[in-house]
Length: 605
View 1: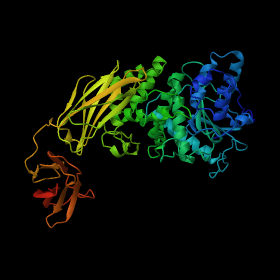
View 2 (view 1 turned 90 degrees about the vertical axis):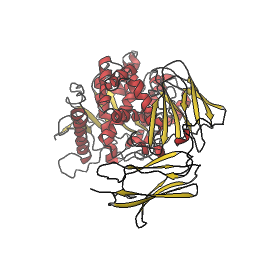
View 3 (view 1 turned 120 degrees about the vertical axis):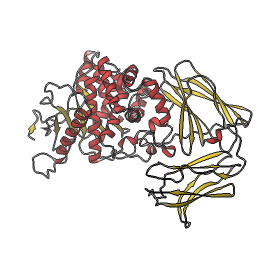
View 4 (view 1 turned 135 degrees about the vertical axis):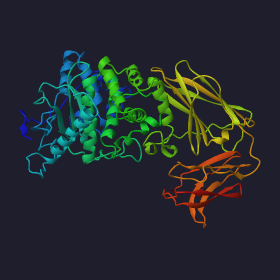
């Protein structure tokens, strides 16, 4: 690579104030600003113009703030939304404000630049001063190793996101940074609590852009916990990797559509892309609680800010689309946005219709089901990393024999709520009725047992009847509003418990029934089913499998069980997951202080 000294060796130019309207783009809560700035605005000490200016300065050049307003800002992973808002406001700003916005959006001036090996990126850096990278150059090529790493990572992201995933090449900037390559500016962003920022550079709905990244990712902000306990995120080279994956995807996005109405999806899909690129790093886990633990909040709500990381947590939606359908669906959405020059939810609906005839309605409702099976409730077949996701604690609705109990509340559009029932050892069944505000709703019933989950689509109206409910560990009604607009939509769920609503009479005796198949051939059959009946409730229930000489092979602890028939599947493996040898095996049922024993044959062909 050839190192080029930039035309100007001046230090990065400090930005000044921005226009009043930027406040709206930063979010009404003002969470992107420091407390001192927000308080000064609330008390009238700062007017709207100066407040907006200081909010932006806090992220671009915090040392340029007046001393009275300097404080450590809250961490903000990506400040791209500030640049998007400023660029959009520039188009309608008065002359004076426009001049200030132009200064805020201009490129940094760094001393050196170099083109990446594949020729797709131009990297700008300093080796002295505040923005300097570590000058170590172990390979002796005249370029700091950190810059070499950055160039290699950026080229690999081009190969992934453009070549492998099929996104179109971003528009060029006509040499604004010294060539037609995508410009990456390496700065000290740690002092302003940022990982990276991408800047649109044109006035239209689509266009070229450049991005900034930190010069070492060694500041204490990196690797600290942003929002979700136990998930501290990445630092140093790992942080460099995920940040380039994230910010380069913003560059790609702006080639489709760069409007400020898409900021939540810009951040959600860019955070998803980090994990596509580096699945072993799991950097996105530091945000998922901000989405999964507030299921009644709209998918597309909120403007990304230090005080509101919901858009980053909404990367879960990208994972759902990729795992439920395929990862091309995310690209289809961006292609719809590019064709229609908006981030309308109708675009999402049209894109998803290519893989699901229920479109966004069905996808969002299904994601509500997947989102239940996280943490300790994780089950295969839903989110692949669901056991790493936080579990939304849901108290069961208590029931009273012969009485009707109710739960009610409000949710927003494209949001979900859950009503959980715990059958415990109670006989009988329940009827469930719902009253839902006007609009489009989906109801899905989860019947959760030891051996699997049954998901029933029960429509949006009508009584739901569940006889013999004690066949299940949990029963969950998932209610999703699938409208594209609306806040505070009311719902009410009424549950009537009837002890006599059984699906079958209780067995007359404790019994082990014949297994099937028997003999069991693991090379031909996936498993053998051991069926048993309880004639009374059992607080402690287990099924154990032994060799003919009494050595334990496998034990199934089944917990509390009510009087009814059950089935347990055995795949022929021991506790270590190793397939056992041919022979006779005894299986013993222990329940309600009694036990029963029977024998099966296993043949390995």
